[in-house]
Length: 411
Image (tube, rainbow, N blue to C red):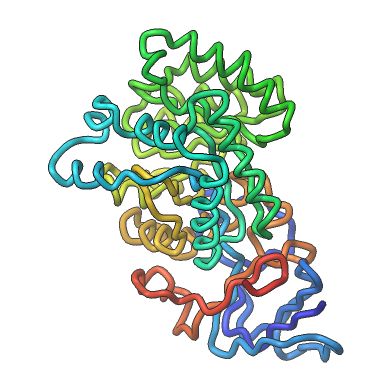
């Protein structure tokens, strides 16, 4: 099937040359074609250009995008979409003055979600999770990474990863699965950290590898959770099964976790609300993508990732939602892009680059997703008529999406 989109006011993120990410000053550059057309055949972008030379394509469907912007679908490289229930009470507890750390110390937080997940059947977990996945697709996400980590037992972690696998099989959106058994220490291992890590390394990982349920491995490297040394042990174990690291780090404190992640060739380091000059130096000239999660900062009132310092130092940056029940119960990448502009002082160009090509890099799919290029997947957002693409973050509370195309099909 051929689909021709014509009269596009602005075709954004057009990359004729193959790139896998953009860094530093290049993040302020967003290549575009005004008054453009784009051709899709089956699930791929096959051609595009100016309306001055728009071809006459036989046997094609046509979408007239007069006044509208077309850009790659969002690439959300950090989510926890598969979870059970919610944590609404903790939301109210924070309003009443309790911190995330205090709530966690009382058995809330991740352990609360783990309790609910262990009590939920695999089928019910799938039914709850697919509703969220369908919602983020409608909001323009064409690729997502989904983590386990609310199981914290062998059976429950496998249950989460099997649900992720089923979502990947039944929906056209690109999905990457990350094993996050090292999300928190279960209560019974509170005083026996090495025992729980032994469980992850010696029992969970072999079964996950046997069923081919994960693409990446993660750990919550943070004061009160997994130390740098414990995180390194988990990264090393993941390597033995071909699982590259994507690590939660520097959310509340800086404990030299970024240096360890770079040393172990982590694909990404995520959160980074606290970043030191030393962290920035370590990230320079590395292949590790820093990932900011601004709607997490918005929701739980913690500092925002210092995007300006990082980009001005020459680093790349990706944006993601952190969609989860406790600290970011939203998978809306449009809000993420707007929040990055409003609160992190990223320009619209930088934010869109961070949410498309750099987001794709942070989940290992930038060769197929994240930009308008011949041969890439036809995952696109067609907006409502806009004055310019600046309206996307400017009108942060409006739904400006007209159509989402994933794998060449309108959803």
